Length: 268
Image (tube, rainbow, N blue to C red):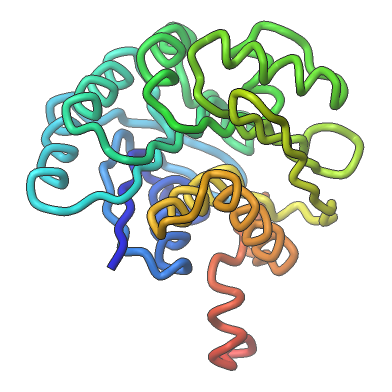
């Protein structure tokens, strides 16, 4: 069985972070493993508090997995401090996994900052060059490239800026533009638009985590980077279209919609 490891924060509400990643891996028939970098107290409305995990424990978790289990792909999410970024980067450099997907998580859906200001440089210098692909949304890309992104032409310019920062490839998500949520995949040489349709729902908690995890799962299964991006985009669209109206804020996506549909469990 193919495997994938997520290195990210825990979401007590179950819609994002480690929980969303493991659900996504399972939905793709990939065995999921996890390294928890932080514990968040959050729900669909807010992040109430965050407790970072000690760097030695983070390192030990990564080493425990790699020393015993085969890892076909790695997805990286919330890394809130410079020391955590450095720990993850140095430990992954030691094991050199085949595929690394980096989702540069900076702010929660409710607006809570999840990446410290002083961690941005460490992320850019130490971790981004290790990744096979990064998956920023437009606000994240603006911070990392230090340029405004107002249209699709700006998205192309930002992708080129990422390459200058040492990034191998990037999927720049276009959901924050007023047009259709078309994402731009840049492999370092060629641009590919991954078309999308806008689903009008407030239930989008964990979409970035889910998309990046789906890319990692598809890479683990042996798909090319472009195919993995395209399959992940199709998966997240279905998950959003059939999202779950839970809680009083941004509800979660429906990670298992297709599985439940095939099993005739949708109304149970």
